[in-house]
Amino acid sequence: MTLHGVELIRLEDEEEVAAVVAAELGAAARAGQAIALTGGTTPGLAYELAAEQEPDWSRASVWWGDERCVPPEDERSNYFLARERLLDRLSGQPGAVHRIRGELGAEAAAREYDEALDGVTLDLVLLGLGPDGHAASLFPGRSTLDERERRAVPAEAGLEPFIERVTLTVPVLCAAPEVLFIVTGESKAEAVERAFGRPPDRDTPASLIRSTAGRTRVVADAAAASRLA
Ligand code: 6PG
Image 1 (cartoon, rainbow, N blue to C red):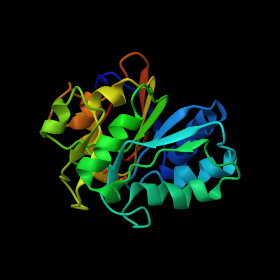
Image 2 (image 1 turned 120 degrees about the vertical axis):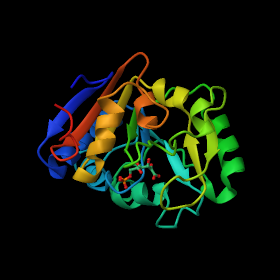
Image 3 (image 1 turned 90 degrees about the vertical axis):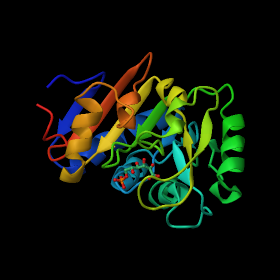
Image 4 (image 1 turned 30 degrees about the vertical axis):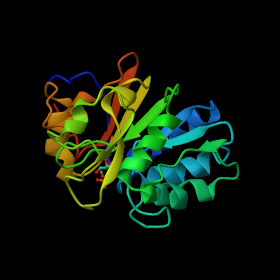
């Protein structure tokens, strides 16, 4: 099957996936890049390994691709995951941590983040993939997919947890020279096929996210990549 605009890094299992993603994060941190992190459950191990391998993130700045509208100490927040598994384990904190302040509510938090991103190009965007093909909080068929002006917008959740969210928009994600998807597990195999093995489609938002001028890579384990030849 032809891949659509992505390079596939196919690995055996989730440990190998985490190690490769951790190495990418560490290199970006060392290079002092602007790094957008993802939420969900998949990246936790990669965050831990990244902190072990590169504990000094003082030259980097950290952003998020999306956030749930809960306070930062809420376990469902994407910031909380990154703090527990990555930031709290570093010896050198990032020069800037640009959290999406979900506790302000989606409208206000999106407006604030949109302003913070003015003039910023993210260097590395890390994204997960939902079983429905969503990435960041860009869900299938929603109007958020059509946003071309704003850099961050409010988003309704299409899957659990059903909490309102803030998401970066397609143009901002595609402007990054490095877009890296992390995907593991058999439950993602169909979404992987739709997102990377078929032409772009609004029903599979991840299929719309490709680095315009750089590269888009997918780091997947054998189970997640099983439907790609
Ligand atoms: C979120 C995300 C989201 C996530 C996928 C995959 O806030 O929910 O950032 O886009 O990456 O839903 O989630 P899992 O890693 O939990 O499968």
